[in-house]
Image (tube, rainbow, N blue to C red; front, side, top):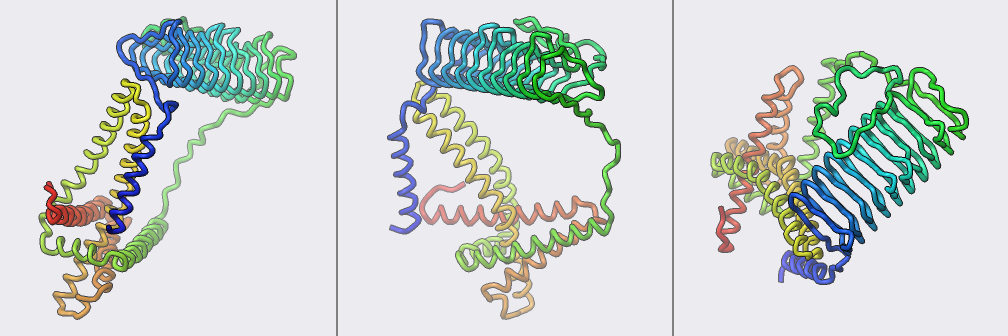
Amino acid sequence: MSKSRKLFTAVLLGSLMLMTVATPASAFDGRGGDKVTVPASEVVDDDLYVGANEFILDGTVNGDVISGGQIVTINGTVNGNLLAAGQTIVVNGTVSGDILAAGSVLFFGERANVGGDVIGAGYSLEFRSGSAIGRDAVLGAAQILLAADVGRNVKAGTGALEIAGKVGGDVQAAIGEANQVQAGPPPTVFMPQSTVPVPVVRQGLTLDPAARILGNLEYTQNSDLSFPAGVVQGKVTRLLQPQETGKPERVPTVGEKAGKWALRSIRSLVTLILLGLLFLWLVPGFLRALADHLRTKPWPSLGWGTVAYAGFFFLVLLILFVTILGAVVFGLFTLGGLSATIVWVGILALFALILGFILATTFLAKIVFGMTLGKWILASAHSPLAEHRFWPMIIGVVITVVVIALFTFPLIPGFLGGLLNFAIILFGLGAMWLWTRQALQRKGVPAV
């Protein structure tokens, strides 16, 4: 058995073993529809994935909850993390882990209890009095009303922030100017009607007399704001708002552009020559076969190169579609082990495809084109170097890089060099396509 077949067999056996020993803990429960409800009497002992127009959780999930839809309501218990995205997200229950949520309106009711961090983004974020965040709150919104008790620190970026609860650590707030007046109607006029009322928070930073910040307060503002006495126990620091400088970007001189152009060309030349020498040392027959295909079939190579270039993007979309479809289908049948395996195999296949495409188009295609060009020039000059192992590649790559560099000189329209470079890539890809077809035909495999 050859080394390549041994390696393939080992990888295949390893994948089968991983699929065999996959534990049920990696499974998940997938649900979908117009409205999905988990009643109070139901306990889900898996991660729960939901895609629905409306999702209501009244029961218990012993795992993570990942949900997307127009309305997401958590009234029950999540013994894990909550990842939610939608127009309106309501939390009235308990989440033992972290919450990552994004939506138009995020509402945390009086009974909301989060054991970990809350990372939220949207138009309006409201945390009612009685709600609790066990660790940090990282919030970004047009307005934020924070009456929850936060165990550690708060970091906020918003135009309007009001704090009415207890913060166990520091508060860092990048906020809008307190005297700034909103022009035109509020954005809620143009948004779909939310299922919860949206409060009106005053621009800038407001600290309620009942609020308590046990650490330091740092906020952005061009003038000092007055706060109730005793609210902030640490140090209060005001930072100036970042100002627009209005200075135009510096335009590089012709000399600077020429210097960067020369350095880029030299770097490309050295890289291609070194990689070409490496390929000729490791796989000389493969590289010569590609050059022969390009030399004997230049125009078919260009045509098939175009097909291969377009086929790469189609294949990327196909892998993504198959991976997502396989994960959802096996998830719906509660075969979480197979679903997780499909996802990881899809990710690895996508990574390998993209990496191979980048290497082929950035380096190998130009080396093949250069080797073909160098051999043709030397053979036309009846030079004995035409049959040399390295010189045709070196000479051809030098000519290729120099010509591309001349067409990308800063004083020449950039599209000429880009067009030439793209054509060279297509020639090289076509040669690889033709070589692959021939190799498959020799093995008796039908090829495109």
